[in-house]
Amino acid sequence: MKCRHCSQPLTHKFVDLGYAPPSNAYLSADQLHAPEVTFPLRVMICDTCWLAQNEDFTAADDVFSPDYAYFSSTSSSWLQHAKSYCEMISGRLGLTADSFVVEIAANDGYLLRNFVAEGIPCLGIEPTESTALAAEKIGVPIWRRFFGEETAGTLIESWRQADLICGNNVYAHVPDINDFTKGLAVALKLGGVVTLEFPSLMSLMRDFQFDTIYHEHFSYLSLTAARRIFASCGLRIFDVECLPTHGGSYRIYGCHDTDARSDTKNVQALLDEEQAFGLTELDTYREFQGKIERIKDDLLLFLIQQKRAGKKVAAYGAAAKGNTFMNFSGISTDLIAFVADAAPSKQGKWMPGNHLPILPPADLVAYRPDYVVIFPWNIAAEIVQQQVAIRENGGRFVIAIPELAVLN
Ligand SMILES: [Zn+2]
Image (cartoon, rainbow, N blue to C red; front, side, top):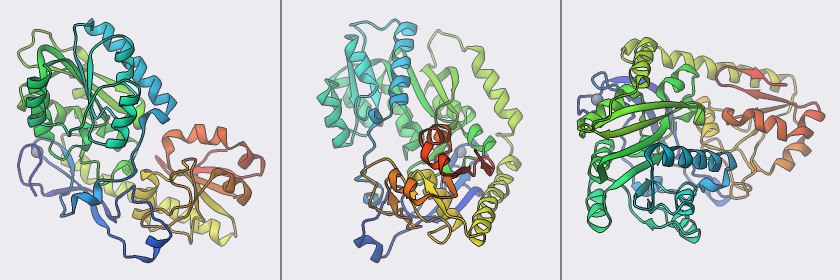
């Protein structure tokens, strides 16, 4: 396999999580009796450009084109995050009714609705039909496409170059990151700005967030790698912010490399921090696997102890994080009875791979568990607060990442 950015041979393994089914392939009762497809879940590190990337494997694309579409507007905190961003960036760039904003992976219009409300012309690029329809319903114009150099070429012929291109949680998910970045350069006006948000590789490594690794997540990005990819496409990252979203994300600001604006001091400061952390040394990546295996072992030991002591253990959060963790650990219904989730679309189904049944939160209360393992550690505080009845019945909450902890 060659590096998806710089084409150098990829020989260094960074993380090996074994084999896993697609993370959102929730199973129906019928499917429980059918064979299940799994794919290697391994991340390689390129020691030339430092892009951490999922290993290639042969798979039919339809396996990873999930019929399960996530609607961004269902999260109120994410809606607020988008609104704050729109206010900030409109002011910073002085966007007006003469500007043009493009959002890549516009989802259900959760973000662009704010520009529509301000009378700033915009266009969302979104390939998923169900979310695109939802966006159009609230007045957000959508072009149904995947983004890349070719799409960008058609975009500037049919519309025009953008003053602002934004993309939240899309950059790490594109298979061809070079083509995507070239597209940004084509679609961006001279003097325009690109902002992209993506989870930070440094946060992933610092807090052992290996459960954010799944097949559809192709790249695990540092500023060091992103800056190099931008540069190869005639773009320059001139500012960066660290955000608390998704366990630690970056928001990078890019412009054409000929742009007169100078880099803020944030860029060099974060590059220095990444270097001090060891992101440009192979040993840092080599040591990671041993550390995450320890985290896995700690949770397994805890679950086995509870089983032997006759305790009742369930889980909360039927999301990709839990799938990655449980499939890596070999945890199944022998150690965790079921997983509760508030999303009606998941209830009554089974988790892929580990086959834990997914039940409504009310069933969790009725079960009177001694321990509830919370897999989405990023919203653990929220879940503990919500699930008052569990605590009143003497149940305790457990997280495994960044280290095993009983929360109450
Ligand atoms: Zn490379």
